[in-house]
Image 1 (cartoon, helix red, strand yellow):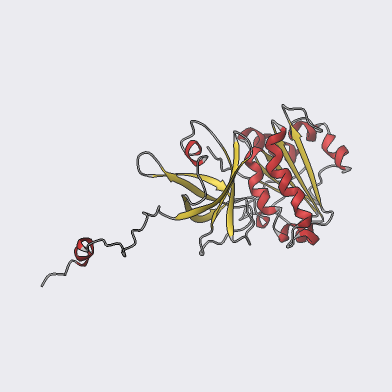
Image 2 (cartoon, helix red, strand yellow):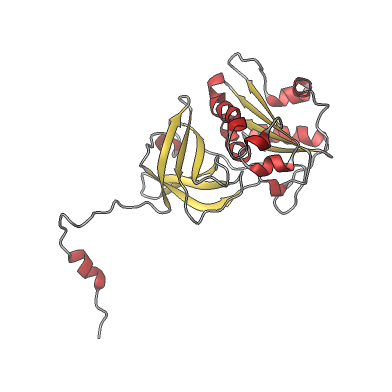
Length: 280
């Protein structure tokens, strides 16, 4: 005897007004819940969170859309929301001819994206040895993993001082980070923990602003330390995380190592870590 083709029976079932027609789901689909555009180059969006997803603040996942060829088009994106959040937040550039971001920038609430729930990354507390002060060095959308870490209670429980530097070309590109930092003291979950521990150091490289210059230059000439009233970076007390362009990462690694810091990893914690995943 053969096996009865149950699927064939389902396919032949007539569609009536009472039969709901389901929208085809993307693989690993999550629904967009909010979108905000900051400039013609930057936007953020929030999505539903898979029930099974567990991640450490600072990690990234692969997200994307279906490409023109019908196959998933994925890129690494840092999760900007903290590990305790019910939703996921992402902060993205817009590249007009970019394979993914040229399409992703047009998403609206209710749309679906692909999200592979396998978080990884080096910008996590586990990859650093205990210290007293932590530096978050970001340029552009490299602020995203720190948006997660700045909202994580563990950051303020582990360090006496938290410094976030953010360098962009124009003032408007600082808006996402500035707004988040300014909201932290009033945050019902971590406001008391933040207290006076957090220092925000934004700089621009093109448009005039209160503080001009690349963070690498400002570190080398000591301007950052003078502005913040700090003696310098000491490997015994200072820890650092870096997220930006390949050039920035390379330059900051050299600067941090000149202060005696060593690069760490999940398997071998040390004094600083660098994120090596990029969005395109």
